[in-house]
Image (cartoon, rainbow, N blue to C red; front, top):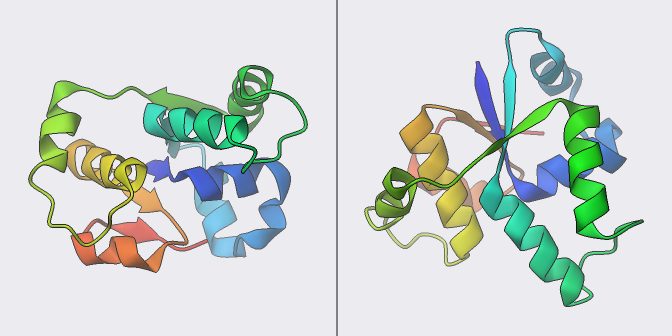
Length: 129
């Protein structure tokens, strides 16, 4: 199973995994599960950190790579197919980062791990924390 973890859930996974249900943790640690983090999430974290809206113990340049390794999460780069799929999405959600993450999940056939209930309107297969 491929799971695309949204920005908020990935940060929880890094600093407070107790926020997840046992069922979700079991899926995440299953050896058959491929955990993915969108490059859009990394961009979002950098922007929010620079604006003072995301407190991290160290700069994103240091935080993200070490936590990717710790959580055994691969980065899902943004492709032209992903960008074009955003244009096909209805405007249920205005956040451009979340729209990209939804488009990536749809194109890649991945389940989306998100606490954002509004993303369910896109029909993407999702997991709750």
